[in-house]
Image (tube, rainbow, N blue to C red; front, side, top):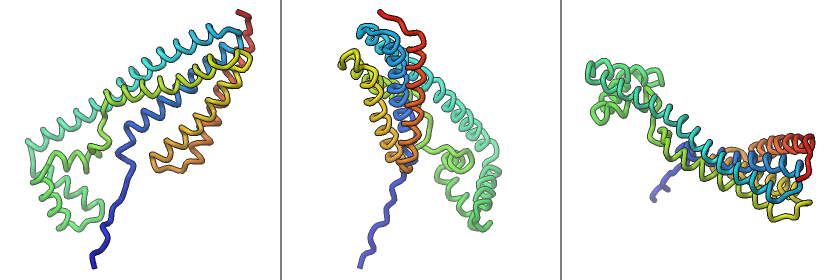
Length: 232
């Protein structure tokens, strides 16, 4: 009788793009909703609300893309520098680098003889790959990808920002504020749950965290709008 094939599904490979997408959408909803609430409680004009929302969407998407690109590019530069240094060290003293791998495996619990055998075989197959993974902690699933991260952040921010803009402009002006509050909190909660589920984390804490801080941010923005209340 054949034994069933054992398979495992891990979430680590999603961490790069998942972080960018969840962060972008969350910021798109929260920052644009907060901006709109500040304007909506200070004015009674759909035009002013729409201008503020669209301006926040464009500025936020560009800012998110630029910030993510710069941040992830810095990480990519560090990875490239470390890999270049490791490549030079392998050319200069391959035996010492193999011994370094051996010591790493001994430190992880292998017997010296077995660690030496593993280090020798992995070095023969892909010396740089073995050092990148086991010495530097660099693996393909978590490598820095600046363009992908920037595009994901900009797109997700824009998608998130469209929600409060639509909620505020489609609702009657007197209902704009509660419409933005309710729709934004519902989607923020759903986004928190979705992100947690996709990353394999518990959904309830993530949902509660996103909803609570979203409510706080929007309430503060609305209070500022009321403080400087003007009629347009």
